[in-house]
Image (cartoon, rainbow, N blue to C red; front, side, top):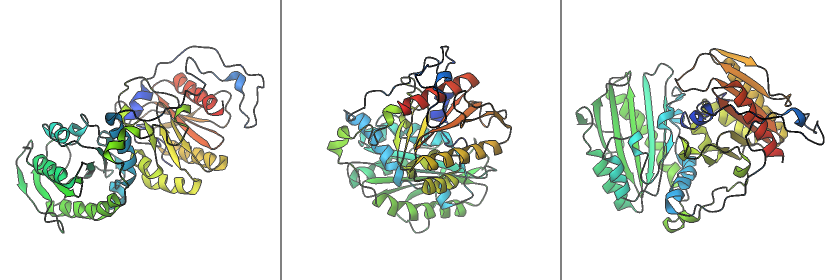
Length: 400
């Protein structure tokens, strides 16, 4: 299983993990309990939680407005957005910045230049999600984004306008095999290793499919990769059951009834658009190794993942949660520069690591994994004491 089980969980979303990495070490005294050792072997009397809360919050209800509803719909739609790794198994490395849930008035600029955001907002985007991967040597990159609009006409017009935004370098029309209606072109790139990229906009019913492929190969190869992506993405998005536009505000914030038992992130924290509940296939976008994660999720019966300051995975049973823990720890230990460190005091089954070779400048230095009954969870921080406090608090929150 992926150690930084998500790409935003030691990145947990690069975006989501930045939050856990920036947490402040908090003081405080250990929690005392009437019975020190519980049935799982946890010694509650020595758990140090700092000032982190240890009791569940009141459950959340509905989104309450269309703006938040659009984000929740994007989380739902992510289940039906194709992983680049499923198009080409060499595309294993997450491009975490480009893995993101879209909002009505923010987010598109991560994938497309201005005035893309204004165009999407004017066409009343109802949901969107983008995912991206590269090869280990960075010689091949693929971004896949799906946007939902109120109707086919809005999707087609948005595609037309977005495809006409002048790129940083001249773009020459270039066809995508099997998709003559795709608005596509080839352009030079200057900020990545490959020096050429093909991008394509394909309206499909109320959806706009966007793909960007950059590699050290010929444009024909990039266009072929995009065609293969569309071959998979069209039937997958057709299988999605969209929420009616007038019901977005009624989408539940916590459809799995345990988000309120996940350690909360700071208010307005960076990456917060990707905080919430994800179905297993949707969570794969954030995983360091989505193929390994998919196998573990299936074997261990993972039915939901909740991502806030910590990330919590609900498995079929306690045995499944322990397997996820072992898999995460094994992958963590295999990472360059990974050093096993002492676990969390009071949780003898917890496993912690220090990462001395950061993959990115804001990659958290410390990570810990633990379980509570059928739940497996992880935390990340730049500070060793803080990450252990998070794990201790998360354990108590799940077992309260």
